[in-house]
Length: 144
Image (cartoon, rainbow, N blue to C red; front, top):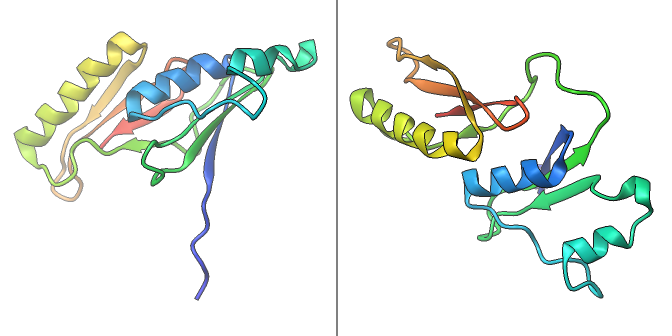
């Protein structure tokens, strides 16, 4: 039997700190402490060569259960649909109107943070409803 491995989810983006802080708010994650010898991430970032400053950021689940999220600056913008996306599980165990209410409430919380509502996939008898949204750089994610 294979052992379970830890993993991180990596996002390509234009502004790593901005996207990381968005996901901290969405998921209740936190920015980890800076490396030893640095009082802050700003101090660490300023110690890097100019071309590397602002090129990466991370956030972690404060409980240690969820994966680390890593954000890296890339020169190109997003042009097509994500091949992988996060499902934010806000309606687990809920069905019908109760599930829709939970999805809509979370959508309303995330829009002021910079998220955009894309479309609602209504329950079809096989799958329950889910709400597709976009993060602050246009990456799809679902409220599920």
